[in-house]
Length: 209
Image 1: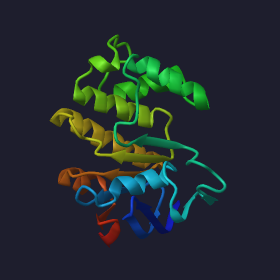
Image 2 (image 1 turned 120 degrees about the vertical axis):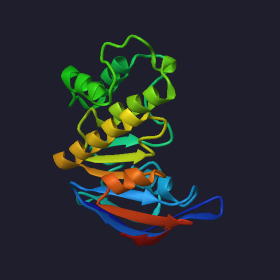
Image 3 (image 1 turned 180 degrees about the vertical axis):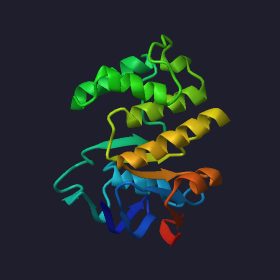
Image 4 (image 1 turned 180 degrees about the horizontal axis):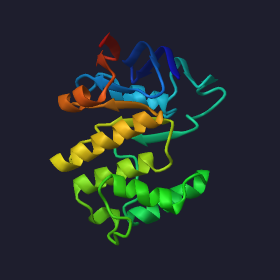
């Protein structure tokens, strides 16, 4: 369970989050919808512990910024944060796996296959197409089977066949019990994937449905 309680954030004199209160439950997919600048990405950055905010964010009973600095089991795709361009995808994920030591080589290979790429691929990330880079970033987000997934425009730059694969992947992660929050301009993604859509405007909640 993630509890967001009266969260606000000002940046350069502008209110980018304004008294946001929400609960996110395990095993559900939530969609954030709104125009660019509505606060969707900033809300996800706040939940990830990447920015400090006024108010409280409580993750599985632990207060972010007080008891924990970051969610303890997080997969994230926000603003192209992800894999290193001068390594293969397999090398990238093996390096990341050394930090928490929870994913095996088999787990890494499985995650790469689940996004439609090959674990044996010898090309470096910088040689990938935009769509392949997006798949690689999603593999990076899921390979440790996180409890929380924060994904900004997860199907961006991916072809139609790949989009279907990523949607199936996210529904499988939901069935595994993950809490998933996605920001998307893709109406079909939101319709197919989400249990609840959260509408944002100018840093405020407008409605949930």
